[in-house]
Length: 185
Image (cartoon, rainbow, N blue to C red; front, side, top):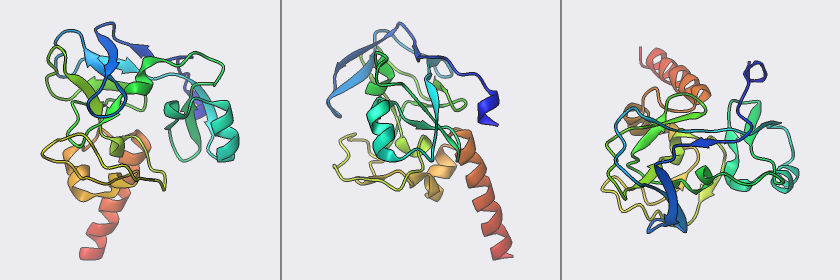
């Protein structure tokens, strides 16, 4: 299914967004002016890579921070020889101000003021068996402290971000919820 869709060669980022030093981690994306709920601010691009590609090979061929799992079969990544796009600087927050419209389109979830950092919750965009061992620096009142890339399985996040995970994760969540309902009957 994924191979039939055509993706941009590189990401598009709204011109009202810039890269700056971040209090969360390293560099981050910041709003130059206010951004309204529902506005499209990033459309991710790259090339398709099979998820069966050995990790060492993948990491030698693509920008590490550009890897987005599209489904159980493919990643969308920027080749290492292509200049990285600024979307790689989007940091995690446990209470993000963006979420996904589809597998490539990032939209504003809550109003973003001028100079606010633009964030996403990594739970919406990954399903790998990786634990991020650094403590979360988002300082949100909803901070989980420890972030795993299986957080999409947490019921409270499924409810909070309903319909705004990667589409294949939305499908997994639906199947998981249906199986839990049938078990409880």
